Image (tube, rainbow, N blue to C red; front, side):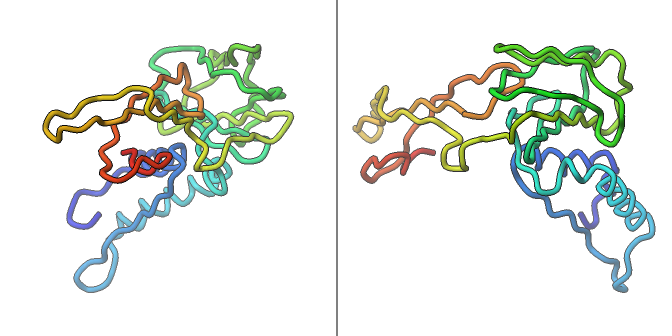
Length: 212
């Protein structure tokens, strides 16, 4: 940002976290004053974000987004055998349910704390009891330790695509437009709905080449 008002510490951390749980990267920068110096309040703000990152960076650095897709409650990152669930707001709920994962969950604790979280895992879901924790005003991070490393298909395999399962006739161009059924391989906090994507390509329909 430059002439705009400073973003708050909460805004910046949630911006960084939202990028991480979405399997992206963040670049946070700001411009100097006319004389080349930086405003004291901005320096203080960035240092406070740096302090947060030093304490919670394990859940951000060297992680990938997933295995559960973000929603209004938050999202997740993972590395090795550990999954980090980033919770922004529980909306008064004392429990959350995560879709089942084919991996035994050994323990859950709040990141950088010995505070353990009770849970119940079965073939349908993982249910977390959060009644005993105090939510952080910025982001509460839960560290889930599994028996085996978390495995998700590579970036080109994060979706299963079935081409030409339906056809839409475009009257304006007098041509059929193939449709595709797209199902994310990442797991939502609740369900993973199917999406229909329309092909606007004008060349041959190679596998996925013209999907938008």
